[in-house]
Image (tube, rainbow, N blue to C red; front, side, top):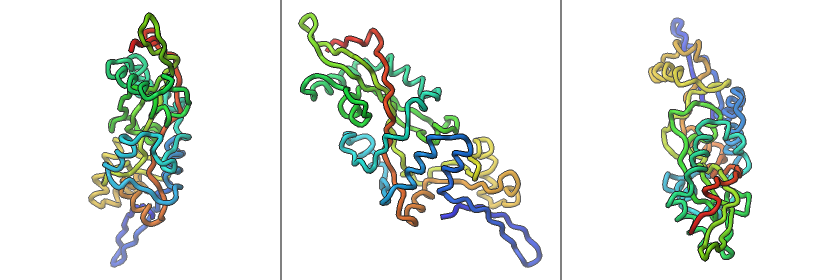
Length: 281
């Protein structure tokens, strides 16, 4: 499917239309033109997925992304190899929430979830894996939502947008002074996200072969585009087109490929704070 813009030049009875074609699956190339690294990899993974797969609605998306134990999510709709925490921590909003989780994870709710995880462990040891998928099921004890529409348009915004940043623990139970305590060896931070185009009509920016318009230029572009003022768009905005979630669903229908998926990052391991080294249960 081609996404395209037009501009008209009238001469007598003849109307000539010049079309600057921008293919939807050229979006990863446009991202790379801006120096982005992770967002184009995720989008190419979506385009390359066969057979076609789409969450049919928000309820089905929640089933896979939230309600289902992560180890039970079908492996063919998971990617845990692209997003790296070493990349994510370059972004202010990620660093801020890592710090918050590091300091606040052992809240009453966090300890309650820790006890729940331990109750399902025969040897009272959890977190001894580097798989975010396994940690999410057996050792995750706290989380924060991350991302907003007001965030800067950058590689992180294009790759993750809104997601959940989670904390899991690695440690074991022992008895001290006749009481059970949890000995925290490490805490692990990772991202979990759903890469999909479920929300109908969601606007994804005005794109061209060299990138995306910033928010100010987008505000200047859209009213002209909506009114069909092609002459006014032919200069600075030549080749620019608005992209919506629906464009990806149409691409899937035409090409019989492309697939929504659940994203896990790798795990950033950190030592616990001294106050969290020993948790009374």
